[in-house]
Image (cartoon, rainbow, N blue to C red):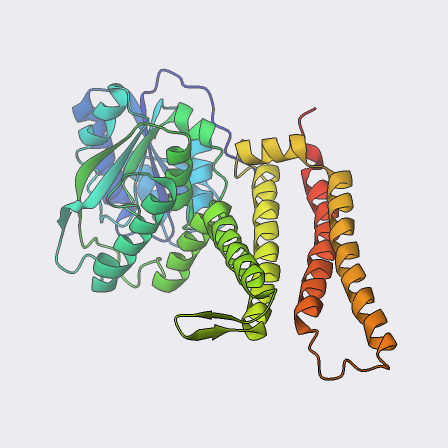
Length: 392
């Protein structure tokens, strides 16, 4: 899906966008409340209900309640919002669900901060009120706090409720974020990109009600929770790949260097060649994870999840395919030279070392060869992925 393309603002100040999938029982209530709230604000506005393939009378009910219905047959929470944003004419966009769990009757808290210079306003149920039975206990005490904490830790958003469905954003800000995900992770993508773009984000306490939709909710706890978590890590390859990969490589290098010359005893603990084997494994694994991290960052740029990357810009200026090939070849040849030396010595001693051990130099040789070969092929892949992103 291409990033959302919004029309230029017109005389309409506020567009209330409500995604809808078989919400015949509640969408009319939400639309009427939103129309009433716009009148109370004394502003020009519109209510847009995005019918996301409903099989009931949701569209007719929404139209009767004063909403403009936009059809979007491609399913998905994010897809519905992308279509609704594209159809909206207002300078400010208000988002909310159609199940009547959020109260649209007073939207001043989501409009006034935008008028005063904020780029985005997040509702917060945590600092507001959650009616008894409105939220499952594992959402309230496990899912929401964990996902919000991870998002704040990775992106420094500084919010208390990352998954409140009632929020607002300026049309200019939404246009600049390049939103593109089509599922429930759209909610996380919006906050992540807003935080990375250093948008001014305000919070307003809100109430989560039980709602009036019959049947099961559209939200699937574990599936949608994983999609949010996956989106966070996908947009943060540094923490997912580069940091753990770099630590693995550093630990492996330390173990290799510490035991390369012989056994080492620290506080009565023997560190012999078995620790060197572990060090070799950590070095190779760490190198692979770091390489994937750089590939992920290039992919994020290529696919539009990121608009710029200072680290990659520096790497593209200093590293190229030729340098990677030379460095990888040198590493592999050094390892091969050590192996040849071991082989020659073995032949000279009658195809036997006579009880002597050559495990340490063999481990060094094997590690260098593997890292060298991986560097060569990673350089090719790095060059292929980064070709379109090199400064011209």
